[in-house]
Image 1: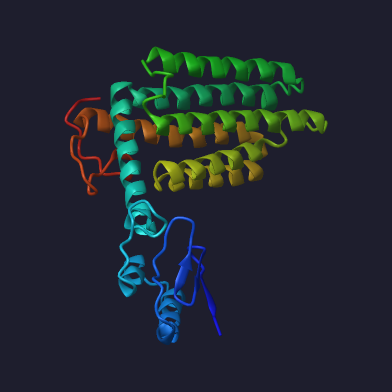
Image 2: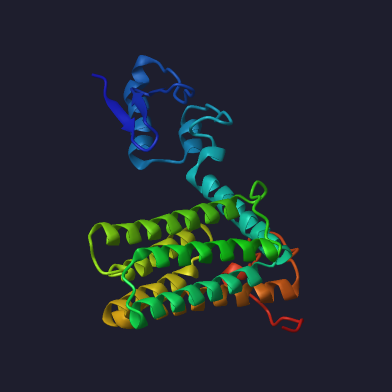
Length: 290
């Protein structure tokens, strides 16, 4: 009686010593008196999820490069290549950050955002303006100032050479659109202006969490800052705008300091898996003056 064993992680079926796959045959036909032995060998390999080379050795079959079981397709090899690509992307991002004065960009973004928040606080808390048009105009101007300042300090909008920066820009754009959506929902619901303001801090925290997965785990600390900021905004809604502006100022100024120190010590020319980047926090004492 024939028995069928499935290699679950690979989706390959072994039947009496024969592995049926689209691009790989690792089991060789044997004589009838070896049927049980072949089944036990393939079954043990399937149940134990043995290394592909071990399966090949059982039947003296070589593993063909590029096939489903070849070493270059193993999870370990994929993880190594992925980590190497990530290190290279971060290194290129650092070189671009140093060349295009990202430290100044983050500094200006932090202060322009705080200025817009301070004006919004004045309109809400002092003048009690409930018309959304002044706020719409104010934040459009703030976005224009931020984009203008970014271009003024020499930051390029071209990201063809830097996929990581392209991802960061797309995430930032989505974040801004979602913030505007929250403001629109506030108007549609007929609530007083910026009743949903703490939600912006939640969106900020989520955005930084996403960035921590593609850039650096240390951005989790920035996400925690915005999480605490959102909680304080809910507890003290009368100064919510000021708290929101200060929270982002702390995050952006910290990034500015990191990239300024990176710029001072010059681009890193090392290589290999032990290379440490500014994102990792390994920033020595700068040798230039602020």
